Image (tube, rainbow over all chains, first blue to last red; front, side, top):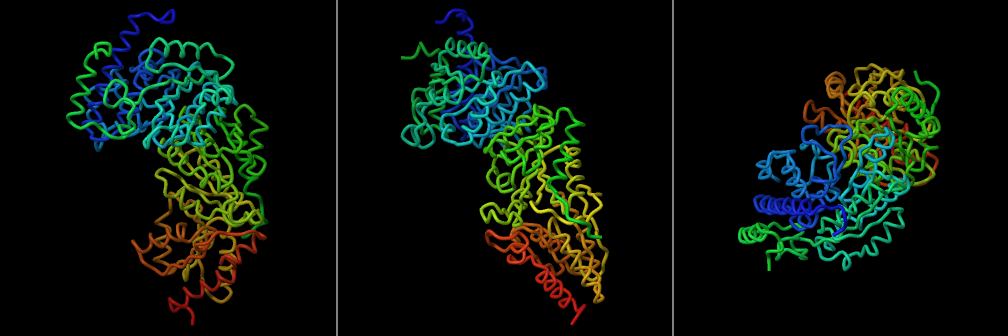
Length: 283
Length: 315
């Protein structure tokens, strides 16, 4: 474990992430739709941001200097909704309204319905551009806020993702952090068999990003990379977080079939049972 | 009544510069066409607040949205084929779905692009932009309306699309444009010409010719395509009984389709649409293209006579 990350903090984040994963299962099961695989892969990253890294305050959602988080892979909404609920931005009971008619919790995150969302996303390749706009705004007004964008790896096949990455590099936006949830899978299978994006870290470096590769389920590594991003002043940082799609639920792990398929009753019960205890306790 | 031709793009560039002086938070963007769109005037005066992002029109729209969501007014310009065509889903999600305060001022709409040819002559943009929830759509007929419209969209929170044309156009209005209001440029009782953009002047010319043979033609400039002045349209339907629509746009999805559907639901009268048929354009001298693709004065005259004959106004 790298120096400076207290073990209690790591344990606390792990426990929170476990709760969020349980909510992801409950939400996608209740809605009988949604994207459990990519929500579970991104959960630890979202947890680290919402519960440690971001300067945000549930009592002041329009605080001008709050850090901005853009979930460019908007289909991972259950993970973000659950994290924001646990952090106090919305009532936890509201999570059961996910994807229901009239809900603030749209299938893909929607700022016009849920104001603590910084940008509505869903159609891929757009969140990074909006994050670049936010980072430019902070620079123009000399505001201290930082902008974080979470990108999916299937999304790296989209041309506009690279347009926006190019812009972040060109403008040397040191207040911008791009986090890639590199779970390796998309709807139809593995990214590398469908349309390979590797060598992704080299590509990001070529686009002028200070690029860090980490295990996206290891909190000390996640926090270390975020701290490194804060220390990087000459340009934007990219964190390539190697993750496992469906992480935490044994039968979903590494299965692209759970990209956009909710669990049935038996699967939900089994998943919740697995997630009810710390991962070390599992066989 | 019809003044000398002036550049709509220059009028936009100058108005944007004035807006920049007034609002220190206003940001302008372009995608490598700042000389043509005239955002260069703003860029030279306010280099820090001007972002020429190069050839990335979709991402220009999402960056614009990201800036606007922080409380800024953002003007983003490029040619219409890129703004409405290339970037459509970015205008839809990043800007409209997010209700971002971005004003897209698209130049080079329609066939009057001329020599560059059909690839660049978008005649579908009004339909695309009009279909987006929350979008304001304005098609100015001249430089004074361009100037007023550039200011007017700044006053109205939310996304807007202003479609300009490459060619200089005769001045036909006094610039008293208001969002949501049609301008009656000529009163009349036998027939109404509803026109937008480059064809408003031709509409006035034909109306003048018709007056010499005793036909009284009302001419409405519908620069505000959305919101649309439905009362003015229905009043024209009631009072003149026939409507001729002129637009440099596909008749499938443009103002003609809007006029026909609005009247047929509320007060059915004969409507004829002059515009681009279901075709792509081609290279050519701009106004020769307009004649070739069915928007010539002869065609407009013939359609007017058809409507008048149908109503028994003439033999």
